[in-house]
Image 1 (cartoon, rainbow, N blue to C red):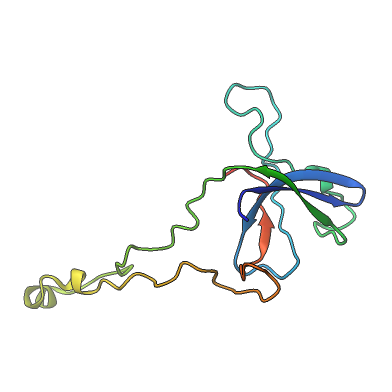
Image 2 (image 1 turned 90 degrees about the vertical axis):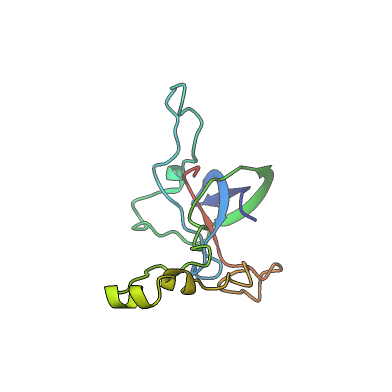
Length: 142
């Protein structure tokens, strides 16, 4: 589930980070963002984000196989506007020429669409108990 902290181990190295589910990822794959863990001692940034660099090697050209994933039992609150895909029922673009506007001044309101009936996964996975999408570890804490 989003926000579950997991430990990832590969090539004798380990790191931890929260799960962030992304549609379109291949089954049984992870994506790790590099460079977002903050270790410097500043009053604002210390301890923010997660560092995936301990897993990085130059051997794999940014690809590693044979990783293991284990839940730690911890949770991490993630904040993201990426899931805010809805236009609240409004069409993305509304346009009319002057004659059309004069004939139908409320044309923009008439273009509103009904809300989506489901907020379920875009890509169901039959191997997932929750029938959810693939999982990605988001290396930064946003």
